[in-house]
Length: 479
Image 1 (cartoon, rainbow, N blue to C red):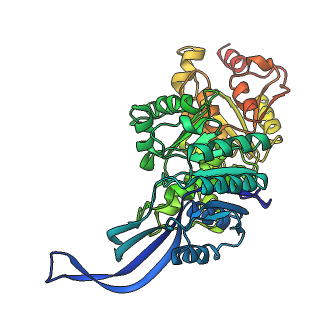
Image 2 (cartoon, rainbow, N blue to C red; image 1 turned 30 degrees about the vertical axis):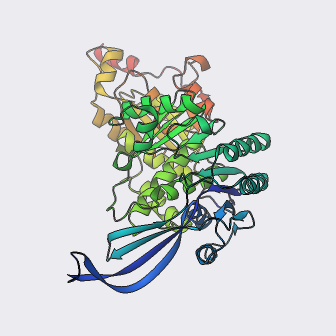
């Protein structure tokens, strides 16, 4: 997404809103009633709902076609003026309904504290003629787009008929549909590629908890069965969990941020996800990008927009947190770093092994692996894992010593430990572009090869140096 290529056009379809902020300061209580007295300072109007998704997508560099309803009123003009600050948003598919007001949410703020919110809205479904106009507008927008986003705030725009028409048009063109849901359950979104509920929405739709990563994966699987697509759960301080129909699960931890306001953070994440996909990134890489965008949004006050420059800088900082080339990091940190690398067009290579007593054969394999991409990640079996595989006398060097030696090699960019018998969980978490093993393996014997190739990556088998092995070195030393 954040490479220099232009993302494809995104159709954003859903409930348009005006977010109005009345900002001032409170220093006393009214003598008329036990309420604070706000000394008015300023007013601010920003796009809300689906309009906020569109503004964020445009700020991230994507052309946008926006579909939704506004009234024939001053609030509609205010929304148009607020969207004009984001070049690249086409408004010719916005439908006007004189029978309903433009949805407006007014927040009264004292400094950073919200005192009260006032909603002006009508949530009943529009009339038949307006629904027909919405369907026509949605079909026209989809015809111009590479990715479709449904931003459902349950305000009447996304009726069953509109959703069905969107799914049919998207299927006919072969473009993915991402849904931010508000339905009680998700059957109405059948045909969507991805639905992105938050924790509360997931729990309501499935009746299942979302406390642990395993809980989230199980609930997401249940939600996926309701509409037949993948599920991305946004879990606030617990990060995000992606569950895919092929059974693969990715947990992305939240980035530590001081939280000022969560208003619109979901819209920002949704926009970043869509723009990344429209730019050719994989779904897994796009989830990492969306996670970083959400972290930036919650650090801002009110409904906020994250720019392309801000997100690029955040991703670069994230990747730069590695202390030095070859640094040893946790699996969660490795997933974050790899996502940041990939967001900038980096081709990531992965290999694994015990690498006990590093020898020329190992070095040759690693150098060959590094030539197949831009960054090389090496996963090392922990001491416990090595003992289960090779017996109680191994490893000869502990995991920290092996990681330190491995990380000192010029061709190695990142080292991560795994405690399981195989690196499958680590491969699934990182989803490298290239998986490398020695030519002594047959392709069907390589753990994780199916995972990598299923996500568009490749398996590479490299030649080995004859007569080089740790076992032979140990035997020679003992003799």
